[in-house]
Structure formats: structure tokens, C-alpha cells
Length: 202
Ligand SMILES: CC(C)(COP(=O)(O)OP(=O)(O)OC[C@H]1O[C@@H](n2cnc3c(N)ncnc32)[C@H](O)[C@@H]1OP(=O)(O)O)[C@@H](O)C(=O)NCCC(=O)NCCS
Image (cartoon, rainbow, N blue to C red; front, side):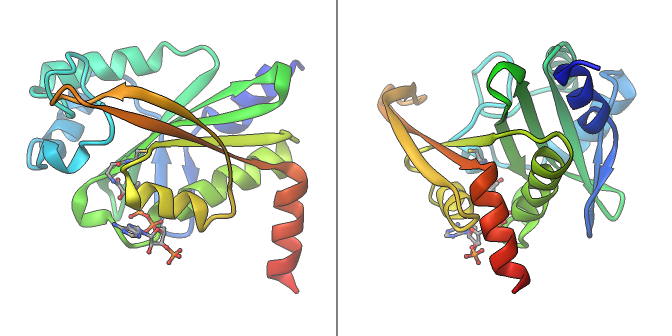
């Protein structure tokens, strides 16, 4: 079995955490409707540090058709997968990850939750699961995470999860108002994960 096959076997399937279900959904109109029925009630301005739309006209899709288009694009990645995150059977968030077998690196590419789900530790819970599978089952060497520099919530979540700031892509994000923002890259190595885990256990 190749490293990529191992990644797909471990990750490209429905997963569960203590409180959450991480589901792989086909890009059908029925599934798009489930996602759209939730995000149509969100304020796109609350998602100013990310893009989940296809058109980039707004931060979130503006119709069920655009939601399905986005789901189709997400289902086409050969080296990654997208989880639709459910809490008590209600859709609350999204996460996309990729695997780069040459460097044994998992890249967390995008994550977001609807506003009512912020601040409950859900982001940490999802990443704890990814870390467990990546380091204890896939034997990856590294997980990298990223955020725009102005995204305090995301920075705090990444940093308090023990990630190291590797560097900054200066002004690599162009915001809708035409200004530019730095992008921060973080990582955690397998050795750091093992050290942090054994500290928690003792
Ligand atoms: C960024 C985001 C994913 C964080 O998810 P979350 O589930 O609220 O984060 P958690 O509850 O796991 O928080 C983890 C830590 O970050 C802290 N945190 C969360 N939101 C915060 C905020 N607005 N300001 C300061 N700290 C914050 C928590 O207190 C917690 O710290 P602790 O472990 O030291 O107590 C969520 O706010 C979100 O979806 N935002 C909109 C979309 C977005 O920006 N996505 C990220 C793109 S990189």
C-alpha cells in the first residue's frame, strides 16, 4: 500500500470525535441544500478571513447552486478530503485537509464553523482527531496549519494547540476592500506531538 493509499484509507471516511460527526458528503443537490439551509442564515462578514465561495464575490456561497458547485470542486481533490461537521445531527462546520506523501505532511487547508458554534472548543476537538490519526496511525512527520494574520480567533486556537510559527507570507491575501494581509504558516512535528502528549498524560 502506498502512503497516499494509507492516507485515503484512514482519512477519507466518516470520523467521529467526542461531540462531533465528521462526514464525507457527495456533492448532490440534496446535500448542498443541507449546507445552504444553514449558511444562508450566516453573516458573510463574520467570515472575512476566509473564502468558501466559488465566485469570490462574497465569503460564503450566495445560492444553493453555488454551494453545490463548491462541493463539487472539493470532491475532486485526489490528495485530500473535506469533512462536513455535524453536532447533534445539525451541520455546523467544514474542514479540508491534504496530504503530501513526499514530505509526510498533512496540510490543514481550511476550517470554519457557523457563528453559534464558535468558542466551544470544536476547532480544537477536530484538530485533536486529525493529529491522532496523522501521528499515531499514518506516521506523518508534520502537520501544517495556516491563518490570515488578522484572524485573532484562529491564531489563538492554533497557538494554544502547541503549533510553531514557521513564517509569514507577506501581504499574500487581497481583501475585498483592496487592502492586503499577511498569511501565517504554523506546524507541529511528530516529535513535538509525542512530547506534548506525554506531558498531558503525566
Ligand atoms: C477560527 C475558528 C475556526 C475557531 O474555532 P473555535 O471552535 O471557536 O475555536 P476553539 O473553541 O477550539 O478555541 C480554541 C482556543 O482559541 C480561543 N479563541 C476562540 N475564539 C477566540 C476569539 N474570538 N478571541 C480570542 N480567543 C479565541 C479559545 O478561547 C481557545 O483558547 P484556549 O484553548 O486557550 O481556551 C472559528 O472562530 C471560526 O470558524 N471563525 C470563522 C471562520 C474562520 O476564520 N476560519 C479560520 C480560517 S483560518
